[in-house]
Length: 364
Image (cartoon, rainbow, N blue to C red; front, side, top):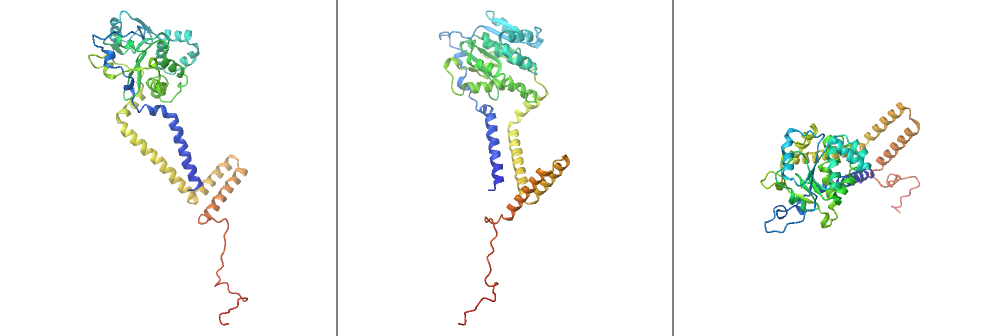
């Protein structure tokens, strides 16, 4: 294998290794292990004869909105949460009160909080701080309560499973200072990046994708029993008579790009196949380009084109001589491609090299 081809292969292997390192946490989401920490029927609907479990999570409900003027389509669900839990504290955090809370309690995060480009990022971030600071249950305004939340308060922390994999952040509960939510708070600044596409930026900086990745990191090497985050399964979340919540029209933060990206999820197999096809085309194009360069004329034409550009910008002498040397070396390698010898050795043909000093002894 020629040296240039080896470099090409090694560079691609290095690129694959870097990509695997950067996307490892995302790739782990392909393995759905939410069932390992699932909230079971015995936890949520214990038999009457079972001894009651102690409630660990404080009886506090947190919700957030821009102002106290909640949209009409969410008021019914919000009021049901209040009416079903008269013995709970209820807090509606507005944009103003949320920022004031961050300024007073977590001033180290205020610059990041103010710097978020999208309001939903601040709405996401504040819920993590509230649960870590006060404890309680956070509920999105488009999630209406259908039954009391008391069974959910018997575990140190819970989130809900989302589709197709990972966890969501629209319904969460925790004791104060739970290690998972402390890890979430410590990761917000690191993941504050602009990915150019609004939907991806939101999802991976503060949204469900972010919290799913942190959850995978948190449980990777195991956690003690009192640090486990229990998972509310879809059937217990909505759409059944025993479910805790019902869903109103929401997701108002979704922009136009979100509809396109979410539509890709409905054609995931086609997207995977298309990705492999594109990767194959790119690799094959690189191989063809490499063969063209090694065929003889490609390298010289590229060298001449580079010299013209360098001459046009006024860089001629040193770099041009470097390209000439490179071309000479390439030509030398082509001349000796059929031999491993550094010099040409001429072996004379004895039959054709008869001289006057040659004496025929055959008749003697």
